[in-house]
Length: 329
Image (cartoon, rainbow, N blue to C red; front, side, top):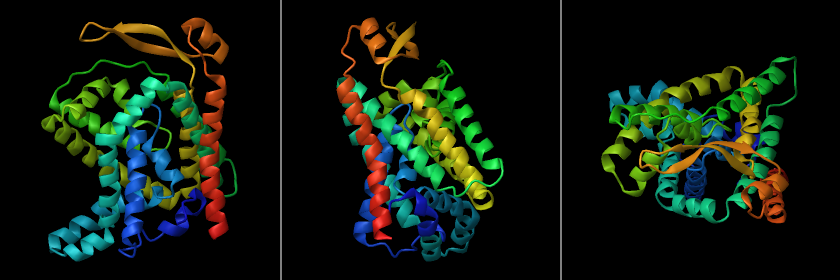
């Protein structure tokens, strides 16, 4: 199966395969969703980046957009069969089932890795995003005029600005949980903009992670309702941009990805702490440092060799996918 970002348009130009996927094909979509879900719970890593790497990004956007452009009309007519086919519902169910499975299961593994092997994990994602941003930019096509470079630079600048903001405190009421879902899900489908980091910025990340761990059904359903609303509305904007200004939009998204590298730099030290609601001192603002300085400040092993190995592993995975796809073509 072709996973290359450079051929996404070829494989998704008509929204979907309209039911022609085999069972193994839908299982593959579910696996991709699981990887997206695992990425979405990590502050600094975007599920949209994973969707781009695995070649389903435009199909996802077009399928979500079709829910409002055609789905409502077909449902009102009672034409369920056409609704499932036109809106690519089987694909969406397989993908979001994978995301849900990951959030409720693999998220624990990711949390363990962040606690046990944080530096190699961040190094891996650094290499993954670095290589992917280049592959995504290459899929935009030849540079014509100044619009694409400007879009790319703007994407980098916006991503750097967002990742430089300090976290805020926020209410933990249901109405704000719904707003958090709407805002963060938009970031989750933007390559390079981490939905988990947006939740940190608005002060609801730990609250929502605790709700997931404790299976707080009311909070989870409220968040999902807000996320579903934001997802459908924002996908319409993205779908329109991809249809009208595809090369410029992809250049912008590639810039988002490159600018987000600041969030996954492995060696960071806490510059400022704050007191949490439980009275504990928790990191508030972190500063990126060189490996040698990290060792001096923290007294911990910077694990330079392991991190570099993980970084190269992250670089190689998108390249292997691209080379494999090219050989199949």
